[in-house]
Image 1: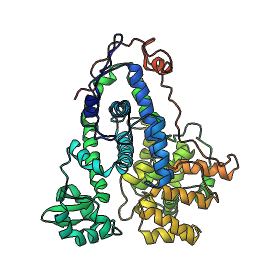
Image 2 (image 1 turned 180 degrees about the vertical axis):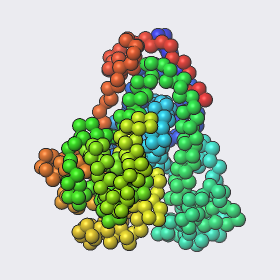
Image 3 (image 1 turned 30 degrees about the vertical axis):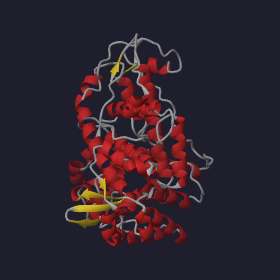
Image 4 (image 1 turned 90 degrees about the horizontal axis):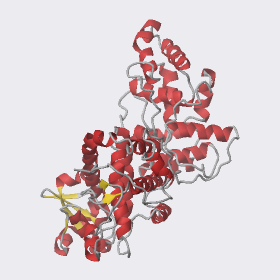
Length: 509
């Protein structure tokens, strides 16, 4: 893709050429775009794509993925932002073009760190899952072929020979023989179906997995994740060339920092709570992950490194100052018979480091739900992690009972956990412990749980539905006066003929 100033020419394609460029409403984004676009369009597409991915994230937290309500709301947002979503729709070329280009733009913004890559990959996977779920069955084989996935549907004769084994081995065990008769089954190399095999959810024979159509999406998503992860790593290597241009850098930095959620740093919160309040707050306003850590710390007077990081940054985010944090941890560890000098030498440095006072002076921010769920799983003797993700169901049930959750509520939460909807389960826990039918927000961060709880308990917030639409970002101004990214962003609704010069081939392979 190239960015140019005046005398721009849009590549014009005939009907057949357009169909060949984007044969489907979804894609693996295997080839980067090659046409010229203006910087104004670059910014507009980037903002719309991030709005879409933020909607995907919020809906995935507040609704069970795949439900009718989730599907209808996501489809409405895709329509509003003019991105592609369905096959056999007229005048889809421009929507598919926007989808293609905007994806590659966001690769530049979200390749810059592990957390950004993880967020981007997860939202893109959920978007692909939605699009694949509404892809007509007669289009699936051609989509797999165009995506370089050599998965062939087996013949009816082959299927009939193995129909009982396939039904018995499939996670969709409620599929009847009649339904399987009219549904395709794919013969896939064993190595491509490891996740299904690991869960004993697929029939294997002679080195091949026989996967019903309903379960093929898991393999498609795994392939997409692997390809996108590799592509983001390659993009990161080329990023210095992009960042050298003062017009692009502010926009990309703003996009990457504005939409992975609030970081809940201590800005404006420092000193808002006292050490005497922590025990009381832990039972009223802490999410289960932090309530679990606090209880373990009080009982054992010690936490391992993973627990100290997760809980310490959470406390920092709700308002604990550096001096309070040092006092809090030292008092607790000394109760565990630790020598004060040993704490000062071995632990106080790490606390100061987390506040940006040592080492690289990085001011660390509290962990999000996604980071807690997806990284550093707890081992024996650890108490960090997400209870809904990492606890045994029976232990989780006992824990919820100790929190005075009703049997009906526990059943609802465990059903969500069984379906791997961990954040939705935590949101349901919030609603039950605060006696609200709808908490009015999409839960994505432990510190968000705390602050929303405090707003309810102190009566400073009416519970109302929060819009899932993020605001149009206002990037920080760059050094350049008239051709910078923020002036271009401010003029998105003005002349699209504004001259922008000097950007070259930032999407080279």
